Image (cartoon, rainbow, N blue to C red; front, side, top):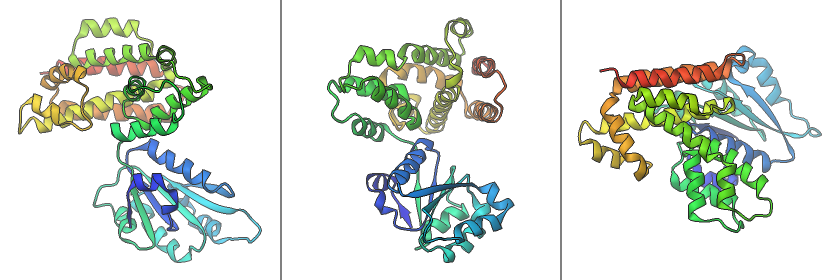
Length: 330
């Protein structure tokens, strides 16, 4: 059975099935669902499994969910990184479930995915698609979190929206800063800018734009001047990937219309001040070059997450240089 994410977000009690699948690229939304489920089940123990753990030892998993004690705490299960490989085990689990709750979390699943189809069509299971946020959903989250704050204006709401770049995980980090710093619930725009490191983030955005423009001189200068925070490298990669994704949309759309019309059709809308950059970059970046760059950023993200001893700053700067070179390839 299919459930809309915004409806479940508003009322978690809609998750009345015992097995649910959350899939999609919006990691921040999936993390929010995990937190909401946990908060609404404070008397329960959260037990976490990874798909590979289950596949390596099915008996351990079946024993875990089958052993129910009247005196033990109720258990809720989170199963991470699930895909079609787990479907046969899930089908075997369904008739054995009584009061247990199992929540499965997946990356992007296309319409042909067997596990997605099973959860969407089964009357005993539920599926929630976690698609990327837009300005409306991000703004709603800001308003919910900062309800009751004095000085909450359109200006500083837009400041938060632009700074998180529609990334819910990044927004959660920024809102945590705001809630911690402004404990008196009185917002000050200048202090908010300082708190969010707007200058540092703007410097990286400028560096990113000049690299995509293929401007070697400005890119080299900004590489020397810009502070690359090693703790934010995944966020930087996210900014680069979002730019590549939008350029790919424009490249595809511009085949049936001109570049300006293609840019105007992008959802979520491109801020007016960014449109000149997108126009310039769209003329330099073909679909083939964009897909090649997306492959490089994917490989780099895997390295960042799997190797803690590599020098991430050097690799990030090399990526910027490679993007600048690629922009100038005919």
